[in-house]
Image (tube, rainbow, N blue to C red; front, side, top):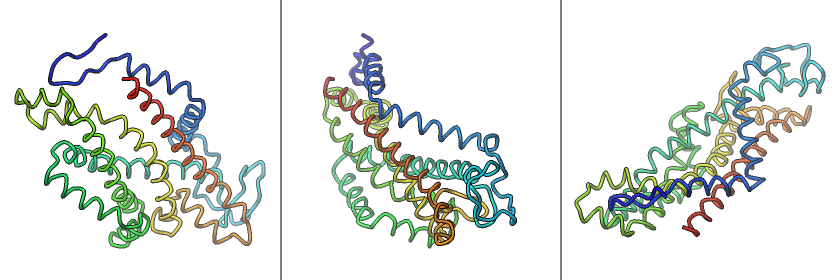
Length: 293
């Protein structure tokens, strides 16, 4: 069955991974969400090929037009093609959320892993700081960070990443606490395996399932946070566009052309929903594997 029998490592099997994939494929909503996210990624990567117009090209003779053959979603207040800007904005929005979540995981995962495994004073100090950070409302904290660093998409990504560091720490710590006293870890400690090796090669692979689920959920919330900052003018700066900045620009023209808010708002809502549904599907798949394991 491919079971690892060394006392230094937990028993894992390839069939278990295949079982998770098989259960995930049975969840139609999660598969649909994954397909939608994949389509958004394709649009973001190939926006230069798919977009019908230059996203920053202005045509002041065709300002605020409705959908037409030349401009399928109409034009904005500067005569720019809304569809093209929406495609390029997908690139910036997804990239910003992805980098922010990666920043949170790279910093939060090892801290949470060490806190959960070592316990004692390390765990108490880490959780004291984590609880303090989580006491701030997320958007207020992000606005404060961007206010200190200055507006811009890079600073917005850092701010959003800081929001999710304590949440990543809590997930990693909880998963590590749940398995730290299992037999194979006690066996590893008894034969003198270095702590760093135990954390890196044995514990990390076993806490990845809840972390993967959390990453999917964080992607959706990170997109909302980035959109909120860009809506306020603290994220993407002109002429670059994210869905949040497009929403902010459209809000200023609400009385003239309310439909301008529909497209970026719909893109944000559907993408966030897709990440949440994907996260739920992954949680169910991994959860069933753990219950049956």
